[in-house]
Length: 340
Image (cartoon, rainbow, N blue to C red):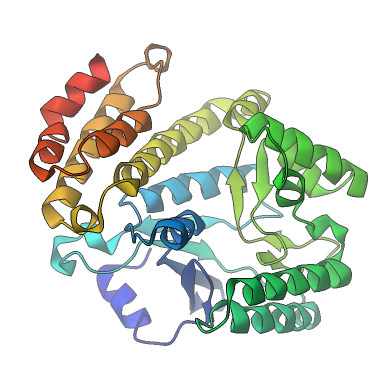
């Protein structure tokens, strides 16, 4: 994993790739090529900003959420996903003065050079429009759809985004229903696809047309895959020989997932002045550290709620009163709510 000095040195260079969520830097050696992704936004935060105008910082728990999610998925599908080697948030480093963005470090996967060049030409063309602030939402939508069609045409129907296709007009958006719909379509497209196997585990490639490395063999590598149906995945893990190790990794992911979610839900309804308030941000962090300790030390069968709901409620209740918000986020107050 890069240390702080190495990270600063790497970022002196222009990123090798820039996407809607982050900047990518290639580094390492020929024997150990690595890639760093700096997360300056998530799709959810981008949606919040578009609909409300609010800019919410990525949570200080996001990098750990991604680390445990990616490492667990890689353990299940090592030939089709990318291994993650580390994650950090420079904002938590006192020497960084709260500056920077969360980062994840991954192994760099090489694809078929010819196919990779063809793929890059399609995606880079799309990003010219997507990252151009003068383009309208409709123009960006058309550029995305054009790239989606081109990737599927050149690299196979397995890359269709079955989750997005089947969820657009569905009334039931629950994780189980989302996976069931996507799985039905994926089996119709290709029942032998690794995407089918992933969906059977409750996980799915994220925007596969835009997050793929064409392989030298008959398959390629998905750059980004996410857990959608946690209950389905938890049951699948029990069938694995090393299920105890995998379940512990899943538990770590689930704890940080809740903290990550709680941070954003807390601020969703707050005015920008409170979102940007350093004292409020610090109080939120300390409150969530208290929650983390509670989740780590309380047996799973005694946790009959999802703590992020507490933080969503706090954000709704005290959005116009800084003093009461800070009191509600005090560790003692949070611990009382968790145990009540």
